[in-house]
Length: 286
Image 1: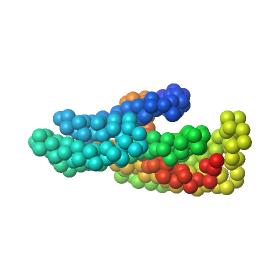
Image 2: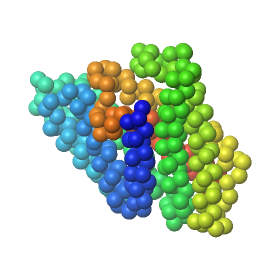
Image 3: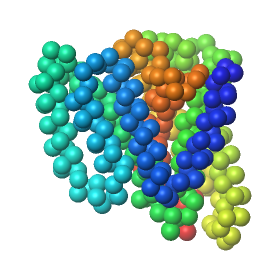
Image 4: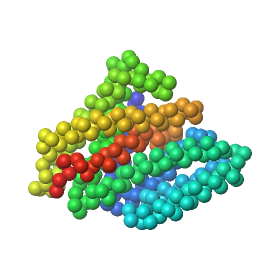
């Protein structure tokens, strides 16, 4: 527990440091690097020894996606798709004895889910450009992380205190229904707290900006509840993969937490959800 808390205390300032470069190309590089490390953890989890062709497929794809602007990505999509399929064929052909198509497909599918999850963080730049929406995009990114990690922490402590009924014993024996309910309430409360703090900070940064009213808090409660459930689903999904691969953690980059995927598992579905509905959330009004 002590190690987990210390790691969190170190990780939160690093997160804010990365967000400091949000409007710079550096932010895209940071997210791309995190995603590529997650790819490495996936390939290692499946114990693929001769993974040259897999890396040749997923790493360039990640770099093109994260380091290109939105218009360029759309232009590159046909090329990315062609190269992706070509690399899959080459991987199966040249590593026929070591790899099966099913194994390669599972890895590629998992990498695709991870890529989509991390890229959704970048999409806030396109959906909510700073020139029009100010700091709302940063607020939503922090809100997404708060929904995921706040709900995860609340579920952990609630489950320890009140947990009796197993949620998914075959996948994650320590998760309980009581913990999941506590996680939903934790996400909602933390979301409201973030919104309240943002409304205060926004008043200093942008005098005269749209105020956050009661309807905004109700929206955050609804979004937070759904996001918390999605976070649990993402957590269970990555836990199921770990069970199948026979590993405890995906890595050890975060002492007490594991690897990138162990820490960002609940984010994989939460952040795309927040990104998709961001344009229709009522507190974004300029």
